[in-house]
Image 1 (cartoon, rainbow, N blue to C red):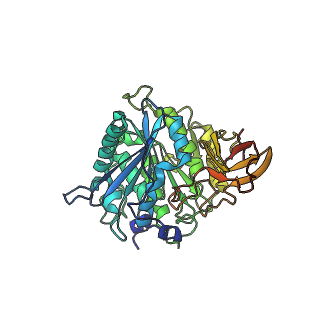
Image 2 (image 1 turned 60 degrees about the vertical axis):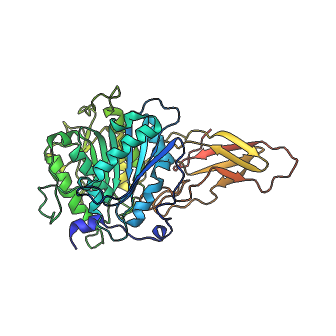
Image 3 (image 1 turned 180 degrees about the horizontal axis):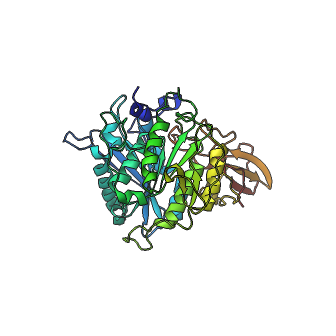
Amino acid sequence: MHRLTLLLLVVATSLFAQQPPYDVFPEAEAPYYRVRYEASNHPNELVFPANFTVWIPPGLKTVRGVIVHQHGCGEGSCKSGLTGAFDLHWQALARKHDCALLSPAYEQPDKADCQMWCDPRNGADAAFQKGLADLGVKSGHPELAKVPWALWGHSGGGHWAGGMVLLHPERVAAAWLRSGVPILKSDPARGGTKAHTLPVSALRVPMMCNLGTREGFTDPTSRFAGVWPANLTFFTEVRSKGGLVGVAVDPLTSHECGNQRYLAIPWLDACLRARLPLEVGGPLRSMSAEDSRIAPLPLPGGDPVVPVSSAQFKGAQENSVWLPNSAIAVAWLQYVGGSTVSDVTPPPAPTNLRVAGNELTWDAVADPESGLAHFIIERDAKVLATVPENGKNPFGRPVFQNLLYSDTPTQPLVRMQFTDATAVAGEAHQYRVMAVNTVGLRSE
């Protein structure tokens, strides 16, 4: 099977079978907004219907940028995009930088050609930018049409995100490419795929190639064995010309997303902090060469690698992984060593606890570093319950909202609520709710 075909496949799981149809998704009421477009039969326009859902932090006056969470190929992955903007952990990153969180959902039928959307030149670029403009009008934030983008993409979504970097380097603050990269003209294995050119301006855009070890890195016989050669070819071409690109191999996974968000979100945080314009409408800033770290390119069966400063690295540039700063270098080492990125800060405390009879509801935001695992409910200073009682996540650390294969929450969305079935009518109680992040730290 051709390597590109392998790159764009998505494993079928029972979770995909449980996905609702495209017209069943969480309601988009402020601070959520949604637009949807029908398929087009005009040349070079999008052949699939698509909808775009955006979340804008409540009370935000001006949006500084848009963080895009792009699903992968296949009908199940496309449906998973319907909940991307509702992810509390990714919202925490957006809130931190006064950004919107956008999740596209391309309505690709089963076995349809994924290239018809994941190559942005086939109409997805135009639909994406039209979506931003229309969402700007709908939300009262017309700046959505002009602010920079931070792109995250899985599988075909990585192909799309990387393609957008190559097409619009002046608009992209950073791009995280999970298990998918665009094909460059220098790649001899591109076959009949329409390849991209690599503009010099794209070399200034921070990018991270992220894949699972069983995607050809340590298992050349796996279904997704073509992912590592494709990533290596793309990385080598960009890095050899001085591009700000890294490689992070997940030691536990294949094509599923695993625990990558615990490195992806801090990495994007560092890039956004360094690159977002100081004033809305201004140009993206350049990454600091002084702050960056370099690590030898990880190789299957190779020796452990340690990041150093640019001046200390003596190898060939194309064999060096670029990292934005020393803190990310530490997190990168933890991730490639076991996918466990440490965190010493507790999550924010829940707010607005409401009690109606024996029904408790509350509000909470996620820990920007480690997300949200569960809540502890106390009644009269004694632990009453945890919500959920037994958190599960087949793809990584258990999280409150659960996770699909493509790193998005399951439907129906989990609500912050609890029923105290043992409360006695007429008795007064005092309740407290604490948040717990995915490394086990409790809030106030």
